[in-house]
Figure (cartoon, rainbow, N blue to C red):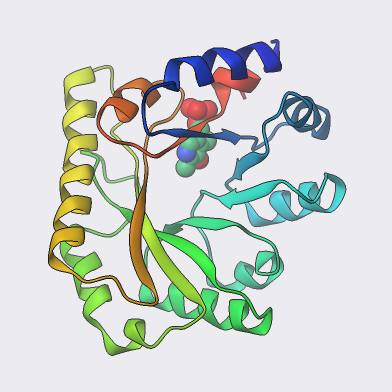
Length: 222
Ligand SMILES: *Cc1c(COP(=O)(O)O)cnc(C)c1O
């Protein structure tokens, strides 16, 4: 694996789209992350808080760390001081805890609502209806230390490219609906659509992704 070359190739494929690359570094050793960093990549995604904290402690402090995996409320405190974005918000309770820990650190943490778009019952996330209900609560409207900046979704793990495309399209459609129907507020300013992984990031970019989360196509199989 030539990490620098893989990054170049992917960035070239994303040229002309609105998608930016998040290098998903989970399970990979520090040396691999350092290599990506030396090649100019400074946005990393991890799916476990403890692993992200361990790597953050060692690596340069200008790296932006994105938490992309399922998040338990009791883990938020360990990363609240530095996490750049949390992609996997799937409950009001979790959002309240992020808000609380962000306040302790005198920060506003950017968050994405994870929306369930796959035809599988193994993936986390909110239905579009549940997301709207969350946004309608007074509890949400009074949170001052989080900002919902977009949506995240994962397509079904299938070879059916058309199905994947339609699932990504459904996320984009929901994003546009929320933008059209809801005014921006202090904690609701949609700009990001996080969708696309190693196997489907080109489809995601074509369907309007702004953040693709790519791991194995950069660092090799886990
Ligand atoms: C692991 C992971 C990715 C990256 O997967 P690859 O197929 O290796 O690109 C993207 N998003 C999430 C949420 C992940 O957990």
